[in-house]
Amino acid sequence: MVVQQHGRPGDSAGVPARRVAAAVAVASLVAGVSGCGGGAEAGDRNADPTQAVREAPDRLVREGSSRARTAMEMASGGTRVTIEGEGVYDYRKGIGELKVRLPQDAAGAQEHRPITELLAPGALFMKNRGSGVPDDKWVRVDTASLTDGNLVTGGATDPLAAAELLRGARQVTYAGESEIEGTTTRHYRGSIDLTAAARAASRGNEGALAAAAKGFGKEPVLFDVYLDEDGLIRKVRHRFGFANGPQKKEVASTTLLYGFGKTVQVRLPDKKDIFSGRVAEK
Image (cartoon, rainbow, N blue to C red; front, side, top):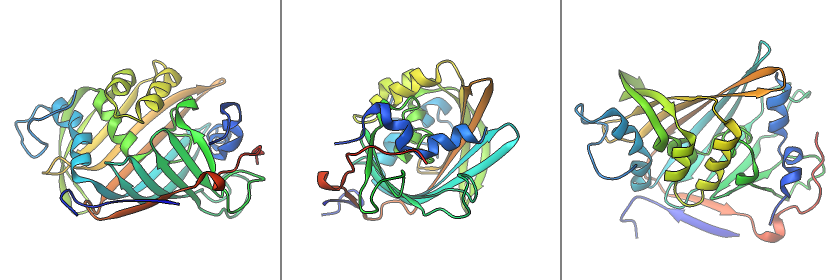
């Protein structure tokens, strides 16, 4: 295993793209439930809303790390389910770990083991996901091979990707102050230009966001983001819409960030621990 650590600033082989749909059962669930740089930060009331929002990803990287809670709400044909996750993220390395919990009965069973997801630049590793995969093996997916860039497929949006979408913020307006879990924040809303976000993304995320720009096409991606007085994202919510046959799917992805700057330890799988066989669809 490779151990990567990060604290506060100043502290001393995979599955072919054609099999991705089979590898990621959450994708079946979706179908089945049918300009950065210096400047004023969010605490400055005179800051330009668009500038404050677009700078938020860089502020996260400077802070270094956080804990995260995620929720993916999917609606289709009057049915709504929510997939929840919780974990940690290192924004400088672009790596994180989430435990993702499928909703009861969402895949035709009463209970489901949590899926462990490791997020890395250009890759998603999953354990406890995919029929026929040994319990001690990981499934690896190239996020640039997914038509949504893994913004919704894995059941949780990568926290850094969720932030980097804001680099493509457009038509940003200030919506007033809001309290997020005891912290006063400034609430902004607007829309995302996915192509612009992909062009401005950090190395490792540009391919996935470029795939998302193609996959979502002209469907609007709307957002609400809540920044604290230091410009840190406390909550960001994206709303995705895409066609699935005659029906339109709606997915809302919410990411809550807290516990900033604490040491994060994430272990990425060795090559020998990655499953190389065919993943059967459940």
